[in-house]
Every structure is written in structure tokens, then in C-alpha cells.
Amino acid sequence: MTGNNILLPVLAHMIAAIILLFFWRNIQAKRIVSVVSNVVVLIISFLLFRQVYNNGIQTMQAGNWPAPFGITFVADVFSSSMVLLTAIAGLAVSVFSTVGVSKARMRYGYFPILHFLLMGLNGAFLTGDIFNLYVWFEIIIIASFVLLTLGGRKPQIQGGIKYVTMNLLASVIFLTAIGILYGLTGSLNMADLSLKVAQLQNRGLVNVTAFLFLAGFGIKSAVFPLYYWLPSSYHTPPSAIAAIFGGLLTKVGVYALLRVFTLIFVPDAFMQQVFLGIAVGTLITGAFGVMVKTDIRKIFSYLIVCHIGFMIAGLGMYSMIAITGAIFYLVHDIVVKTNLFLISGLIFKIKGTVKVKELGGLYSDYPRLSLLMAVVFFSLVGIPPLSGFWPKILLFKAGLATGSYVIIGAILFASFVTLYVMARIWVEVFWKPQLKSDEVITDVFANLPLSNKLLLVGPVVFLAVITIYIGLGAEQIMAISSQIANELLHPALYIKAVLG
Image 1: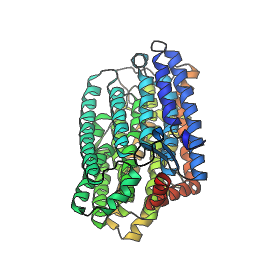
Image 2: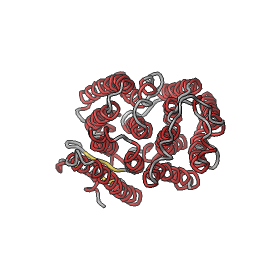
Image 3: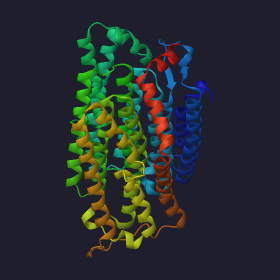
Image 4: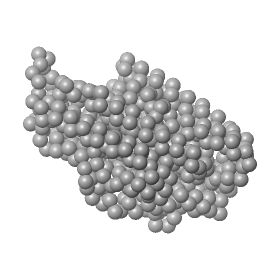
């Protein structure tokens, strides 16, 4: 695989989406095409990652226009890792969707839209042009809004309106920032912007532009105090859709923050304090939100918000070990959060509800499945040696090295709240006997054919195995995260690869 193949993960999803349009009424064909396409994309993404990791940053100039005049696509270790993680999550969700999404939603174009969403995510990760990043963000917003409201139920429409309103606001702010940046530099190529922004004399206007980017990406990342749209919308769609949202959509905002604020706007001491303040606010308010919710999907939605704070904290401390911890946590979080929402879908199939107080007896009914879910819960909490433990250790070390004791306290608080909430879910949902009710709830999962059960449980097992690998193979993930951190903190490598 060469630099000219960088766009293959994007093109593969686009071709899959177009093919799926020709099978509009053939649900079985849609299922097969979607799963096969995601397997192909996973192979392509792995080959791209291996090529970049072994041979260095790969670039492609669209239309053979030389940088910075044309649109550049760049695959470094960071972007290729995100593409690989997107392929992993996309395959798991696609397989789960073959049974976990209703046929009515499939008839209305669920699978083509899912592939357009994955295409937009890969495009956002691989672009080296700031305006092109905006274009990919708009593709993501359009596709995700359709998925969020597909089915037309009242809670979905309400959540979708909040979602699209805040994300359109973020897009307006993002586009305004791009306009100002272009007016200041006359360039949209991110490598070229890195050089030109550093030479600008009007630092006040540069700082204002940086804050506009922070606001735009902050809304998309759901950081404090801009996160209120997320818990109001992510619990409303089916679990398969919520899984791709929870695992990837906020992470593309985190990716943009890490990319832009290491390449174009290198944070000064004041900006670092701003990031740390946002991280503390995100960790604490997200944790408080988790404690008061009794719906599993709402709990998981607030956990998304809470744990974004870990990654923003790494950016705020802005050291090699801190950025390494943030990247490691990003890898862990994508896999675990995707799996959490798939698990919520399984629980709903078995019990017919996701309200904690109405659940119980899951362990006695499904002991092996419960133990599988426990692995994911323990990984989320960070029980050693599972995946959530190692990045927190790195962030603690970074906090001690930089004297950021407030952020250490916030991380500890968020970690203990996560432990408390997951323990409460385990006791209430798994260990507590099922409450007797006048309403008889049919166990849909038990009545499914074995093949359908495997299609629902298989993705959870797949992601759980990857989570275990991240924890037990922490040394390898640490090496990758460290290389990404090194490339982010030394942007000359990126600039040289793009501009020559």
C-alpha cells in the first residue's frame, strides 16, 4: 500500500453506500453487503496503519496539485490509528445491526447512511486541509442526524433537534474561524498554516481565532460547558446507532482538538490553563450527571461526557507523557464505549427495558453473558491490568510532573464515581433478583435463532477481546501512543512530509 491508497478507507465506504442503494428493498442483501464491506475496510485500514507505522507519514495531493495549493490527505500514525479504530467499531456495529436494528429502519436506508457516516469519519481523520475538515464534519452531521431520527419517534425527534442545533452552531463557529484564519494567512493547508500562524504579528487575533476553534470543536467533543446536547440525544436511537455515536462521534472532535492545538495553535501557559479548567469541569459535571441517572443509556451518555475530560486533561498538561496518556485513553475509550451501548442493546433484548430499577436477575439467567459484560465494565472502571488502568497512570504521572494537583483530584473523583456507578449497575441489574411485575416481559433474546444470537453477542465478544488485548498488551499500545505523542509535539515531521 502506497501514499496513493490513503483514500481507500474513504472510497470503500462510499462505494459500499452506493451499492447498498441498489438493494433498497432487499434487506438480506443489505446486511451481507454492509458486513462484507466493513471487513474489507478493516483489512485496508490495518494495511494502511502498518504501512504508516513502519515507513513513516504518507501523503496524497488531490488532482496532483502540490501543497499548499491543493487538497492534501495525510496518513500519520495518529490518523491511521483512528481510521483503524473506526473500522473496528464499524464492523462490530454493522454485524450487531443485522439483528439489532428493525427491518423498518433498514428499509428507510439505515445501512447506506451508516456507511456515509463512516466515510465522513475517515475523511475527517485523513484530511490535511482545514476547510476540507469542515466539509467532512458536515457529512458526518447530515448522516448522523438521519440515523438519530430514523424511525421518527418523538424522543428521537426531540433529541435530534437538540443534536443538530448545537452541531450546526459548532459548524458556524468553525467556519467563521476558518474564514478569519484564511484572511490572516491566505492558506488552508494545515502544515502550511502551522508555519504561517507562528509568524503572525497580531497575536491577539490569533488567540481569538484559536478560541473560536476551541468553541467549535468543544461543542462537537461535548466538553464542559457545551455538552448538554449529548445526554439529551444519545440515549434516544437504537443501541447500534448509539454505539457508533458514543464510540466515535465525540472522538472526532477530540481528534480535531489534538490535531489543531498541536499543529497550528500551540497552547501557551494561559491556553493550557483553559484546557485544564475545561477538563476539570467536564470530569466533575459528567460525574455528577452519572450519579443521578437511573436509565442505563443515560448513564452511559454521561460517562461519555465525563471521560472526555481525561483526554482534554492530557492536552492541557501538554507534555510527552500527558499526550501519550490522552492518546492511550482515546484508543481505550472508543472500543469500550462502543461496546457499552451494544451491551445496553443486549440487555434491552433480554429484559425489555434499560431502567435500572426495573431490572434484575441477569446473572442468574445468563451467567456467561454477564461475565462477558463484567469484563467490559471492569475495563471502563480501570481495574488493573485492563485497558482503562494504564492511561490513568500516565495522566497521574503527568499531573505530578507538572504540579497539576487539581486535575489529579478531578481524575480521582471521576474514577471513583465510575467505579461506584458500574458497581451499582452490577448489583441492581445482575445480582438483584428480578422484581415481580404484573406486566409480563417477553425475553426476545431467548426466542431468537442461534444464528441471530451469535450476531448480537459476537460483536460484544469481538470488542471485549480487543479491550483485553489493549490492557494485557499495554506495552504495544503505549509504544504506538508514544509515537503519536512524539509526532504531535514535534510537528516538523508532519510539515516536512506534506510540504517537502
